[in-house]
Length: 187
Image 1 (cartoon, helix red, strand yellow):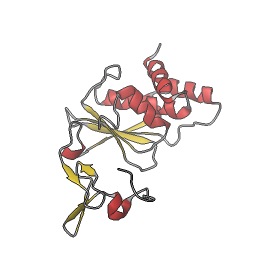
Image 2: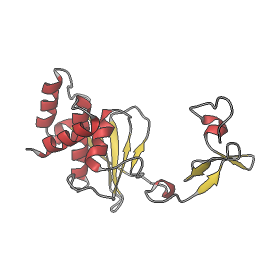
Image 3: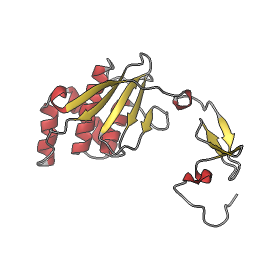
């Protein structure tokens, strides 16, 4: 079994099924890891990935690399682009991977997936060497900073708080929440 097929199967199992997004994410991930000199068959703590979309591709990245939000090694940057940046924190080298716009994903799912498997990295994936500065508060490990929101009393970690008029607030209380509290909280 080819390396692509092994990792496609792993990613499809994690995602729940094989689809074109999983196949393209698998190809991108393998190309980026190769460019960084990392073995996709061995999970490493030296990798941080910035995924630019919250779609199938990101599940392939997570399944193959072992990076995850909970381990703080997978970051979501909501650009809506089918791309990801892979950073080897041990060496500082980083590559951004995306799919060539002229690569066709039209046709029957099985045929497109087979085409992806048979296409070389260079003919499908754009790799750009990039520079990424990772703030200490974004690195894996225990929180580097803890504060309490002056409005809701909830803990905020790693520089995610906002300061207004000398008081510290979580982003939701500072006016950037995706939710609104209805009624009184139950303690």
